[in-house]
Image (cartoon, rainbow, N blue to C red; front, side):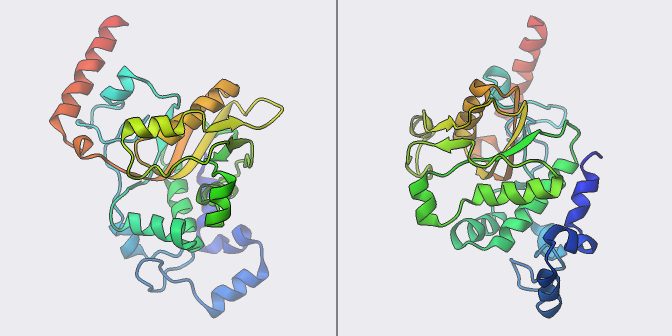
Length: 276
């Protein structure tokens, strides 16, 4: 695969090339990395193989929004056929449930950067498994400056910086900005989330964005935030936007095998085929 040579940077024998600091290698010898979930020796990426195997993976899912599909024969869900989002594909390794949610929360709220590196590694693995063009730039979902000051760091930026370094993709830092300090999305309905995000982002650069952009964040819940970001990037001139997230929250009515979701996809696919 086209990403494999970059993904090898995640492996133990390439630690010095990734970190590029002699003191990091020395520290690994003195204090061997431990799993961020169980505390046992883990190797280089700070998650042991048993804990990694226990992480909830996404099964058959929509290529565009990463929600489960009713049938493994489908590739795009009914919702994305009926109302295509402004992004082309979503790359996501994990379902947002235990223990993946613990991994994300440790990174996001406890500033456990080792957990963030694990999530970046998993994103890279998921990217390497898929066959599509390499993005020209990777851009993090921005935080408002007040939220950034309160939290101390932007988890999306950390994911983007590390993932971009591993896959050798330029990082677009500061070109997409948040101009309103929006409410936290958790606890809001889908309609409230859309209203909350409307007009929250803008393109902050004199030139046009790269033709193909990977927009990165930690968790995708309803997709409202990344949808608004993707719209801004497309309006600014990007030809294609992909979404890369560490975990996808799955609503109850979109669980894998849901018969209503499956029948809707099949019906919409048939209608689309007839129109074409």
